[in-house]
Image 1: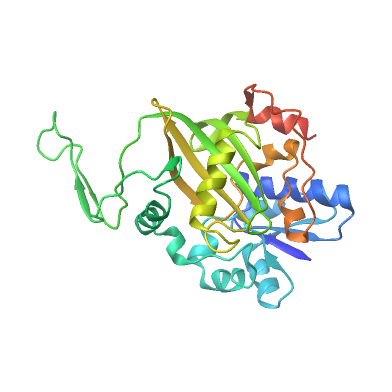
Image 2: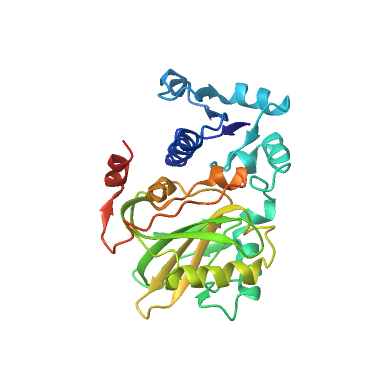
Amino acid sequence: MNFVVFESGSRAGLSAELFFEHYVDATGAQHQLFLSDLDESFQRIVSRHRQVHLIHDNHAFEMLEAGEAVIFPADELTRQSNPVATEISSKHSFSSILPSYYNKKQMNEFLALLTSHCAIRVPETFALSNVCVKPNSMSAGSRNIQFLDNACVMQKIDIEHEYVVDVLRYDDEKMYIFPREVTLKNGYDRFIKLLPLDGELAAHVSEFVKAVCPKNEGVFSDIFHLQLCQDKSVQYYYIEFSKRISGTSCVNIVSGMSPFALIDGVDQQINTRLIDGHWRRFEDFMLMMR
């Protein structure tokens, strides 16, 4: 099978590449991976693996429209903004999305309705979407005022801990949950602590996912990840989700995470050796994979 990854110059593109290389080297699978990006400089990079190819988006769409490849879910915007990518991704459950997934206000209200009994709460989402936000004090004239159209206005959480949870779901009941606590810099994981695959947070995520999607279909199906947090009172909160691997999900390779194994119907080979309560840099995980 040929896989296309859009926006491959991102960390998610790197994660997809590392997952792929690890899987085909371990199994001998003959899949080919095509990493695509609009940046012309991207194609000047030389692939280090014989089954990985760097191409331009134009070539990627030619392959997809000819039925020569499928989309691997590592991109965020292409499947949302490009109608061709949206239509092609809909042919496979692991890449399929709906516009409603990315309407944050609508999604929050939907999730809150179904998860009111869960340990993970959805922050209060306010009815207004076209808003004028201004400070309640220390303001003069129009300073610090924001006018926002089509915004999702949510309760602010006093965040004490942040988490990213990658999930590979095989069927209605069977799923592998890979949670990690993170500190962020510019939206990326900077420091990471892997958490138990069968621990408290994983149990809460399983409850949350099954409350929303009892069957392996829809928003929480196949391959996806959640961003969560915990406040000072140790209450867990949902932040958002994406129907793709998380950007730095490759750190979970050391735990046995393999989205390509899921697609092929092969079980995960779990390794708990590094789930030891220690913090590590993202770069430390990269060094482990050399």
